[in-house]
Image 1: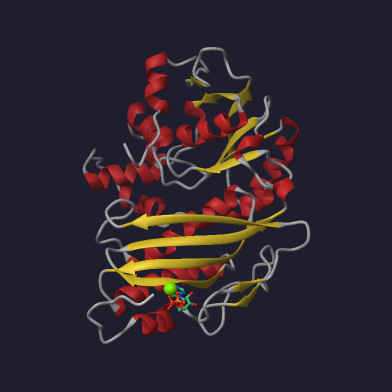
Image 2 (image 1 turned 180 degrees about the vertical axis):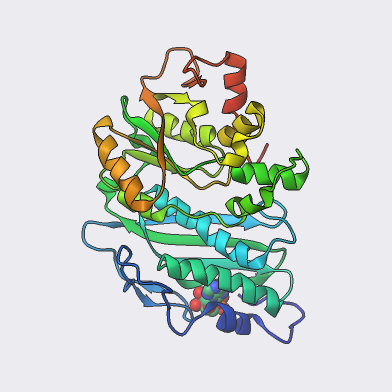
Length: 347
Ligand code: ADP
Ligand code: MG
């Protein structure tokens, strides 16, 4: 769609040709776990892209995420990291479904055509796309306030999809990696709190999240339900509980966090680990009988996986989530209520 009013020296089609359409798709590394996609029959440059059907027995998994300047990222955000993050958050949704990435589209509105900005943005985007072998197959480019919308496509066998409604009473609740650093960094940048420690080295947790794609694939057949932690661990876990009509016990002081967060006050640590968003770890439920296989998977992926609670029958007339402290004693109800509030874009 053409609507740049004052044609810059470089127009819309030059932008697409120079920064987004690539002669060939160049996976940066050999990834035996993610075979080279042959699904894309026709990529950028026509009215539509053409995608072959997924392997027999699998279906497409499709997800969209939009990032708006001033809401999801700061005005002066590093363009390379921004390119990475836009795709990472979408790949994280595919991971949380156990889907293998195939392709994505990019719709972007730009306040101006800055070749330097576009060069960096597209390099961040293409690097992570190559790493996960996910090919850019089309999109839209228009003038407007900076906003970026990506739709990512993957595939998974429907029986292995880690849907939110599949948690079962008796399941363990697991969490990958550690959570809370992204929220800690956001608060430091916004001046919500000050810390006299070298927190800048944790900025990547907010700026360049790693989507847990390999974990999502490894959990096929092992886990029941999964969600990626984008809006806050407890709020996101609650989506699984509501969809599955179950309750949960969560040992909140067993949740893995970085050494940096171990050194802050209990209150700040809990705020960041329980309610902080943007970590993009996977929270999943799995039957107890799979504990050993999940531990082996963690070693294989060099990614710590921690048990943080259990799925229970929803308690009558109480919060569906019971939060237990370090000694596995229940927290006071008002504190539980406070911790259960998740980040809501319209609040
Ligand atoms: P149309 O007018 O048919 O919508 P466009 O002029 O918007 O086509 O786009 C031309 C081609 O470039 C299409 O194949 C479209 O998918 C692709 N394209 C446009 N913008 C982007 C982008 N930001 N990233 C990737 N491909 C894009
Ligand atoms: Mg268009």
